[in-house]
Length: 78
Image (tube, rainbow, N blue to C red; front, side, top):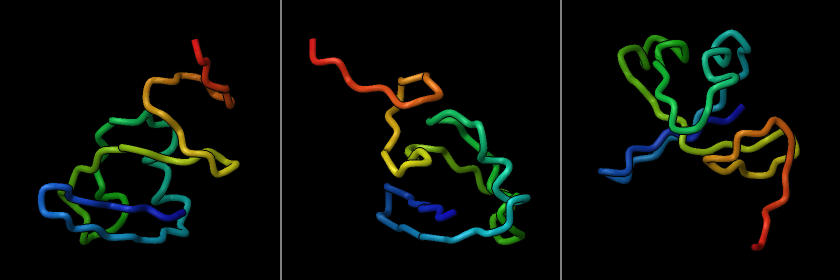
């Protein structure tokens, strides 16, 4: 899984790839805008707190904040 960690105030951005399932468990089943302790990613991330601001589903489609379904849904145009 690829994690894109950014700090908008300075424009810094870091893309890390994590293959260890144990490290990724802290991010599973979390909603967007949830704050998560990043210490599970490794010793150099200890003390940091990250906020989930976006993600993709299994098919690669971006997920939207505020839609609380487990499957895909199509937007309404009303």
